[in-house]
Image 1 (spheres, helix red, strand yellow):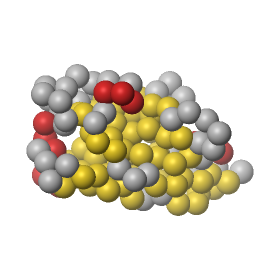
Image 2: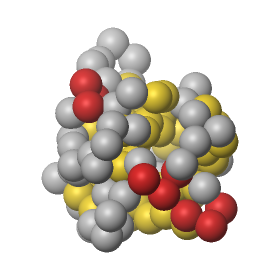
Image 3: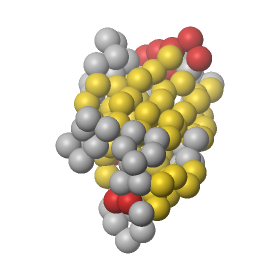
Image 4: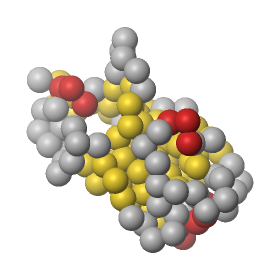
Length: 125
């Protein structure tokens, strides 16, 4: 499976962006999917995840109430809707797939086997 992330850009504080991650070459409907981000000089951190089985979700406390993850299995795509963006949300955002058998919902980057290339999100103050 390959992942292609898109939708990043420059936005002002309080603005919105929707990131997309399109999967190809695998059975997307059986993958749990995650979004992570990495700011300059910082570790990669978990943002949000969605399960393969019932589309249950989990989002990091730092983005709860502002970010939403959802998926469209017919389009092999997972999305990250980001609202009320803050300068501290500035980072490279990457999507990832857990392609193990019956994957659980995980916030650990070690659980994800396949990574997209990342898309830059910059929030100006």
